Structure formats: structure tokens, C-alpha cells
Amino acid sequence: MIYRWVAILFAASLALSAQAQEAPDVMVKRVAEDVLQTIRSDKDLQAGNQAKVKQLIESKLAPNFDFTRMTALAMGKNWRSATPEQQKVLTDEFRTLLVRTYSGALSNYRDNTMDYAPLRSNPGDTEVIVRTSVRRPGQAPVQIDYSMAKTPDGWKAYDVIVAGVSLVTNYRDEFNDAIKSSGVDGLIKMLGDKNKGPTPK
Image (tube, rainbow, N blue to C red; front, side, top):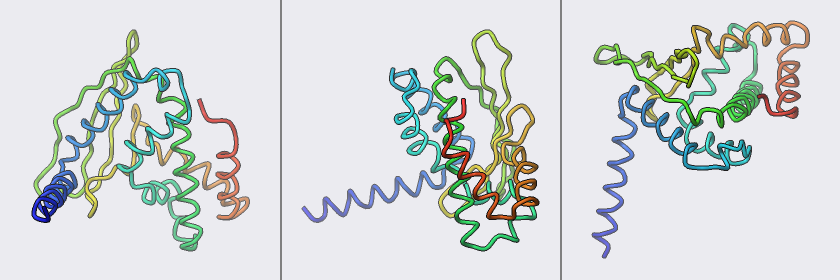
């Protein structure tokens, strides 16, 4: 019996190792198709049940993002002026804001389909861009590109570029203005207030 459990644990560790080494374009396609299929098969998600949408994001999307790097990019040079404790709080608040923003729109994706461009990369690359296109019924496709970096835990996205606009740098002016007027703690308060408000649509 003990050999059986050893074999099971060994197989599980191999599976986890294989997933960690998964190519970035393969990972994006797997996660995206999994999320779309989950939405299409769950009427509560289609109806916009926020608790279930948030659970979907937390379980299937959030683990594939590097929120610390995303926060640092959004803050730009101001990131270095924050203490480690402030950096952690900022990362947590920005993560919450992004999850809330996604949850407000994700249920509308059920009728979308995605195309995936061939990955352009060289062996040994530790940063790549995975290019996709979202097709919506009766509307023009939207290009969504994922900036990805290789980490010890596998490939993680640190930016999303929608129709040429960077998700994280789109916040930079707002973050800079908050820091100029009220310091890093003022930005923390601003993000906290946003996260206490209505879920973005």
C-alpha cells in the first residue's frame, strides 16, 4: 500500500513540474479556454453572480499573474520610495482592484471566441509576449496581448495590452497624481476607497 501512495505522490509531483514548465502560449490558451468553457456551462456566471465570478477569477486567473510586478510597473519610479510594508499593501489593494474590475465584465465573455497567434520567441527567453485576438459577435475583434515572464513557479503575466493600451501603465498617471498630492499612503487610501465602492462594470 505504501508503494502505491509513493507512486501517486511521484506522479502528482511530475504533473506539477510539467505544468510549471508549460510554454507561455500553451498556458494562456489552456487558461483562457478553461475560463470560457466554465462561463458557458454555468448560468450563475452568465447572470453575473459576483461571488461565483470572483471565485472563478481567484481559482483560474489570478494564480497566473505577477501582481507585485504589475503594481511596481503601475507605480513606476514611485515604487522604490515605498517601504516593503507599503509595497505589500499596495500590491494587495491593486490586486483586489483588478479582480473586481475583471469580475464586473467577465460574465459578458460567454459568446466570445479567441484566436492565438504563433509564439515568437527564442530558446532561453525569459520574457515573451503572447498575442491573442478576441472575436465578439457582430463586433470587430480586439487584440489582447499578454506580457509574460518566466518565474520559479512557471510563466506569469505581468501586463495585459488591450488594443494597444497597457493595463498597468494606464494606471500610472492616476497613481502618480495620488502620490504627488498625498504620498504613498494617499495612494493606498485611494485604492482602498475604490475597493469599498461598487464593482466596476
